Image (cartoon, rainbow, N blue to C red; front, side):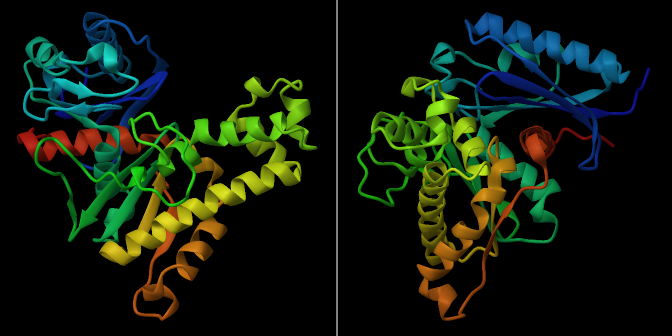
Length: 328
């Protein structure tokens, strides 16, 4: 069995949870993804225990080799106690500590934080942060999270808060957002929003491949259908993605005006779809930001190269730095 010190990273998505193991360097020695059930706190802890134990066994590590555990969750977390404060998909955990039972079982420091913060730690450690000290992160998937790195430091705010420019308003649309406000860019450009744009097009009777893909049942339109239709040349689907890209470009232009990042990195479940939107995002950002079109600063929106490993890498890095979980 491997006795080398290691740190475990855990990343909860909406339906899947990822487990990873790393040493001192930002290179994963083990990575896996499995579905999980969103149930009572004791069920979540049981699934975490099972996942950690399976990861250590499959990777050939002794339990005593673990120096810390970092957890990425889709919810606001009390960074001191690990208590889940709020999350639209994690209301079943509200008021319960995610970290304490895990720390008690394994006898090591356990750190938990909201997913955009952890993804930003991942990019800072293993992604664009290796060559860039000032950048922004957009986590684009079922939601639009945000993160900032300034002078090489991940920005975390008092009261367990974090950057939230993913809930900015960049249009006159008044769609209700899961955060409780209306018109947030989050609800317009993410998976559910893209699907809604498609459903509205089908309901309006517009001639589109989407009608065939959903069997003429508008309520069955999904965001992958919109991307598939666009890839097959469907004008309606292409127009939807163009609108999404323009909204994202406006947001990125506002970010440049606010903090002048060197790069804006897109991370998350829709990152592999970035080829459809990056050119329009960058063009819109440039055309709507005088700092850029007058040549006073430079910025580029890019897709992350970390794939679906940004969250676990960030969780590992944060527990290393924030708890002194030495792996030497």
